[in-house]
Structures are given as C-alpha cells and as structure tokens.
Image (cartoon, rainbow, N blue to C red; front, side, top):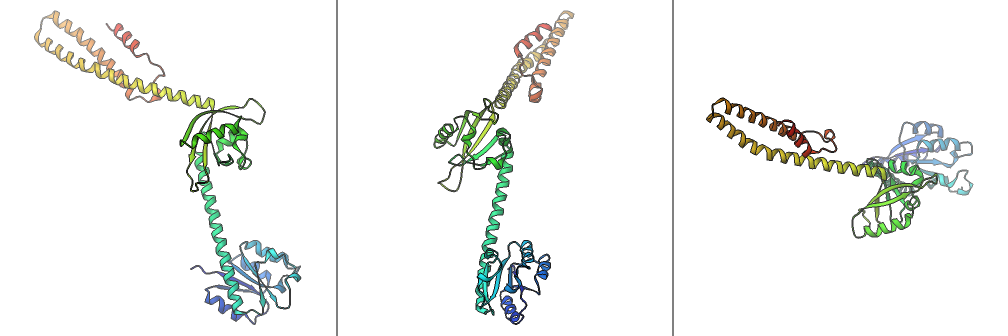
Length: 354
C-alpha cells in the first residue's frame, strides 16, 4: 500500500495530536508547516497529496505564495479549515481553488469523512491520469504505425471525420495534423461526399475496397492531384462505431509501382523459362556426350577423330549456353535486363559458332 502525505498549515497546535493519530491509523505521512513559505520549500522535496490549511493563512497578501504552492503540487487536494463563526463568502480565495471545507475545531468524525472524500477523489484522479497516459501511449503507437506506411493514410469514422493521419497524408494535403483532426475527408476530395458514401456501402459487404480513382483538392486552386484510393474496415469494440482506414497514393507513384510489379513478374517468367530450357537442353546433351565417347572408343582412324573433336567443341559451346541460362537463377532482379530476347539470342549464338 502506497502511503499518502498530508501537509498541515495551522498556527493552532491544540489539535495536532488528534490529527496525527487519525493520520497514523490510515498510514499517512504528516508534514507540519508553520507558514506558507515553509510549505512551498517542503513541496520541492516531498510529494504531498492533501493540504489542510487554516483560513487565517489565506489573506490577500498571501495568495501569491498559496498559488506558488499549488503550482508545485497541481494535483493537491486542498481542505480549508474555517471557524464555525466564519462563512465561506467572507474568504478572499476563489472557490474553485478549494476542494473541501472543514470546521474548526476539528472533529475526529469530520476528519475521517474529509479524508475518505480526498482519497476517493485522488483515486479517481489517478485513474483518469492513467487512462490519459494510456490513451496518449496508444495514440503515439498508432501514429508511429501509420507513419510507417509510404502511402498517405487517414483513419475516419462513420461521419468521415478524420481521427488519425500520417505524415504522408499531411504532406499530400499540405496541412498539419492539428488542423486536419475532426475535419471531414470529403472536403479534401472532388465529389468526396458521394465517393465516400459509395465506399461505405461497398465496405458493408466486403472488408476492403481497391482501385478508386479520386482527385485531391489543392490550396492553390489547380486541377487537383490524381490519386488511387484503397480502403478497409478497422475492427473496433463497439458495434455502433465503424472506423475506416483509407490509403491515398499519388497516381504517378501508383503507376510506377504497378510497372515495377509487372517488371518483376516478367523477370520471374524469364527465370522460370531459362531454368526449364537449361534443363531440357542438359538431358539430351548428357546422352549425346555419352554416345560421342563411345564412338571415340570404337573409331581410332584420323578422319573419325577429327569429326569427333568438332562434335565435342559444339557440345562445349552448348554447355556454355546452359551455363549462361542458369545464371538467371542466381542474379539479383535488379541486374537482369528489363527485356531479354531469349530465342533470338540463342539462334544468333548457335549461328555464330556453327
């Protein structure tokens, strides 16, 4: 159990013992201060949760020191002790700076009630702070996650309000995220409302939609930016709230990536064909090479030896072609030419070496 700390500022010491006994029962630490100045000094060295301060210390001249103390301890639960003969209207301090009041002389039962009230409020404040920190952590995580996409990414709700966006989206729209949040995505697209409405209808029957061509409005009033838009539904806990992740990519970049994809597919086809062709040539080559070796053993006259030598040279050239074909399977894709006329190359190579 983490103990709390109570600070007391009161010139009347007659009830200090009773208060200390109450605090000891609840495992509180107790700081007794003779003045506001001393309280400010101690606030720099101690974490204080609750302040009991007598109304006599809150005069017009002492308010700056009191606010200095509150600045050091922004979550301080402040209890003002006032005599039974004094009304709260006569105080020189705004009521929003006081969390609770307690009459003097202090009664044990009232002290218990006030401490329970303070503990409840502080616990709720801690829960709220913890929730805010977790929300910020999650927001930071999703922000970094979205920034990992090269495309412009934006998350919208069912009303098309922008909830999250990445740096690429800010650059594309040419506005900072602080301005974009809570604005509507359709305001940045030509016919945006109609497009997003149609997109939402499609997403009701399928998890993602690809291939929307849209025009992004620009600040300078030009024709806009052509972009390719993809969207998918984000799963959320609430059935009443649907979030949509939208990816916008400049059309020229999208085309470039499409051509790169086609190029890789072509290279993959070339590699497959070259491997198959090398395999098909290698099999008859092995058979032919074995037969030539048998012929070489059977015929020892000079004429046959010369013919067999020529055949072996041709076999070596074809083996060289097979070696070149197999290189396609070890080269990196970037080193392979974009277009390679394989059959004309083989025909020219064979004709050259006949």
